[in-house]
Image: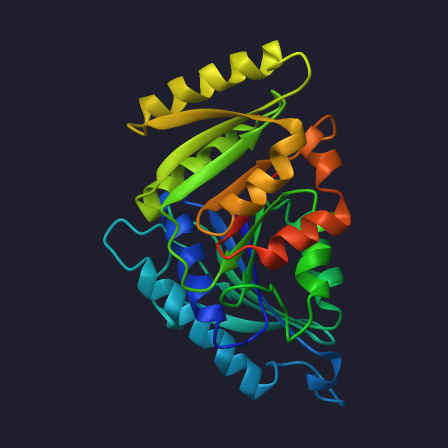
Length: 293
């Protein structure tokens, strides 16, 4: 698995880094911590070398927090910051890579970029072939990046991979997964598995019914999901929700539970939560939201 963690240097990002570290530790993922600073934060006469000192120190602090969260004898990540060295990638671009990771270790990289946050995040996710983007939100209602709703909204709407919008310091009691098609990837199954484990939460599987009831392929897939999670010692309950009531059901669940939506090209969920509504869900949810693609 490849995890891309998008950071803007705000203090609330600490919580998101720790959430991402728990997920990475459980999945043995390759991780990129991507710090983004506005264009005017880059030195006007940039000639290579290290990034701007203030932002560099903040990002190195996040890397230190990440390493602390995965600091155990079985950690797949190098443990010492001395194993990392900054290199200049381009004007307004710097990378901090582990020089020679030991056999069996996973890749952990800190990247810093200056410019348009949404464009940079989506571009990196595509180039790195990320399985999931982790992006942070503040407490309660609203999901902002440097005070703006536009960046998280753009990421959620346009990413080709899964997106985990993490609400600050919100511990869900349940992970509620909504499904209306049978196109479910192994990576998304594992993501849900690990989040249930990390939060010690219950798992709810919600099937979407239409005028003719539950689709045969969805019924079959839900049975397979129950067997899959039972094999991981995760007990799940099943609930059927009519398509006409789905939006209000999800909005209510998102106030206290982590909502996971399996979105696909043939998905009714994708039709209900088109761009404006999906962005609205992320903004109004009291708990974290996981978009599975």
